[in-house]
Amino acid sequence: MKKQRNQREFTRVLVNMEVEVKSCKSIILSHLTKDISLNGLFLASEEKFPVNTDCLLTIFLGGRKSQQRIKLKGKVVRVEERGMAFAFHEITGSDSLAHLRTLISYNSPEAQSVQKEFKTHLGIKRRK
Image (tube, rainbow, N blue to C red; front, side, top):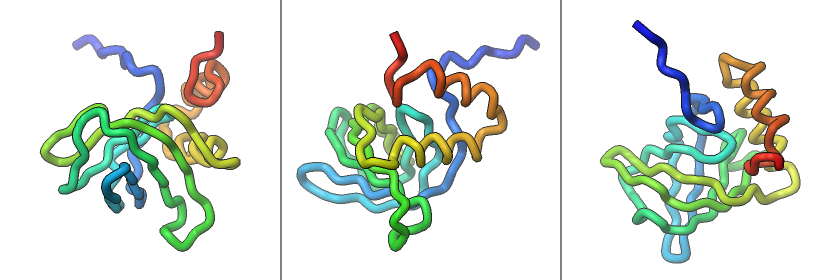
């Protein structure tokens, strides 16, 4: 059987993190992230926002009391029965990109591929 090549721009890693998602109308708290990459995440949640909802996302690296957080701006790109997928548009906060890269590096079984992705991108944008 031929192995299918991954067509994704960024490697996804399986993590279970607490995330706060804010839209202009409400807030969703969840600790059931399924996976995360440099340009998005899937969040398991009974509460959902409609597709195309702009959101502010905060990923708490050591729980809500920790100061280590990843702050992002994103949009809901897919809604399923079990949760929502978000695409990141901007990484905000002075240490957010470094924290996101570290989170992905330490949880990836393919560290060399991840490091290559980091070198070919400026944050979440491809280098020109």
